[in-house]
Image (cartoon, rainbow, N blue to C red; front, side, top):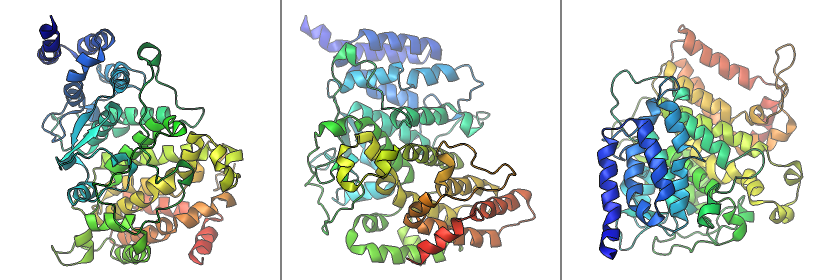
Amino acid sequence: MAAPALQQPSYLLANLKADWTIKPLHQRCNEMSKIIDDFPAKELHAIFPWLVESVFGSLDGILSGWNLRYLQARMAEYNIAVDFLGPSGPMMKLVYKLQAEEYKYEFPVSYLPGPIKSSIQAGVLPDCPLFHNKIQFPMSGLLLLNPFEYYMFNFASSLIAPKNYPPGQHGSCSDSAYFVLVDTYLKYFLPTEGNVPPSPFSDTMGTVASPAPRSPSVPYVGYGGHSTSLLKRHITHQPSVNADPAAQEIWRSETLLQVFVEMWLHHYSLEMYQKLQSPQVKLALLQYRLSMSSMLCQPPAPPGSGTLHTYQEPFMPSEEHVLVVRLLVKHLHAFSSSLKQESIFSSPSTHSHSSPLEELKRWVFTRFVQQKLYVFLQHCFGHWPLDASFRAVLETWLSYIQPWRYTGEKNNTQADGQNRTVPDKWASFVQENLLVYTKLFQGFLNRAMRTDLVNAKSALMVFRVAKVFVQPNLSEMIQKGDGL
């Protein structure tokens, strides 16, 4: 009797594949929800990779899946898809059910962003803890991921995978099911109020396995610091995963954030990637950034004829990609600004008494986002067409340099419509991100000089930047930071 049981997962998968092509989405989701409830993890394990690909499309873009990026709120299937894939929906229930059994799934290294892929292929372990203990030996070209990681990698990849969609499916990015799901995941796993909800299904399947993505070499309370190692860590020396119980409280939050940042912002060359990681070349990196900034918006150099071409990966994000990055930036500002007041003014020695989520709020930008977002924006400033579509990049930049807009505080403008004075408490943020204010501003001016300002949309972009930089006290903060 054991033999038929072993064949059942394949039989189940074959039936699902047949049904997937002939049944409407609502019927498929209803039946899949029942299967997720009724079948044990051992049998669901076999269908999980197929289901993920069926939803998000193939990594090579040949299969488009549910077309979440073009599924608009006005469409009948929109609510069905959003409900099925939501943080408390059937798909996430499946993820947690498989997570409890510690299953692993393969993700090809070849579909990672260029610098990460090149680093792994060169035998250098990426600095991001997300990749620790996930690379197979001998080198197989695959990452071994737990179900939550596998789901989020595929979800994030679907934003940047080239896909051929049927004509007539274009609509507003902010109305798409994909955009709404990104927003929903951010609010759920990186909450501005309260804690990350526990798995709503843990009562039916026991304790969900919670691997901590942070290694012992990066203790939680040391999020603000930098590695002091001057040696590259070879890929065969992967640090063991830290089983710190406190860290496990927010492992899903950290995983989601790291996947989004690595997949959406990490697009530049291996040389630049290594410079970003090595404390030994901090000065050289700064000089390199300055030299790149002076070259912003210049005509592209011919192949092999300059530093900019040599260091930049030939990658241009779509407008939709940039708008999703802006959504990420805005939410992380709100998330970081929700740090409790007692935590803000506590000394470093007392940080260990803060909750893991509060510590994540404290270091979310400096540890995870700051450098990669700067280089991402710099790349866009230097390579984006001189047309009105640059507005998406511009608004992402302006959102990042105005964290005070996302604090949740009301009355951010004066009653007469004039800008409020930027509070002094933001001086440290301005100083820590000085190049984002100064060098990207210089890059914008270079673009504006070459743009047709008779065009109303182009003129509006100049107005938007001017309005931001004339906010009282901001220029003083920038000048003070520049003089340090």
